[in-house]
Length: 129
Image 1 (cartoon, rainbow, N blue to C red):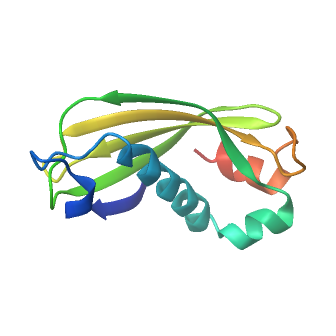
Image 2: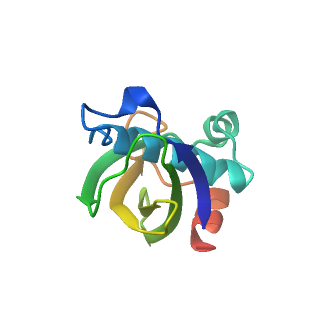
């Protein structure tokens, strides 16, 4: 599912005008919130229904560079759903549909300060992918 588009800004690149690696995870955080927002779960509602996801693990595979002023598209899929966690895969494409990066993130619901079961309505949404 196409979740999020981002234009690379000047402050996100290095001297060669290539995106500095730390920005990919920041953008994935934005894509995660947009994923839930598109499902009818804006951030304030996630908190209200007992969902507070934290990153347990993140793996980034860089497949090609992204440059200043590129428009990147974030494609999200759900790979695994557990009792208290889920694994999300985010593919980042450039305007030529070239795969710039594949990122896998395992989120844990830590609403109560520890691993907590994912609320039923969120679980249903995750299963729709």
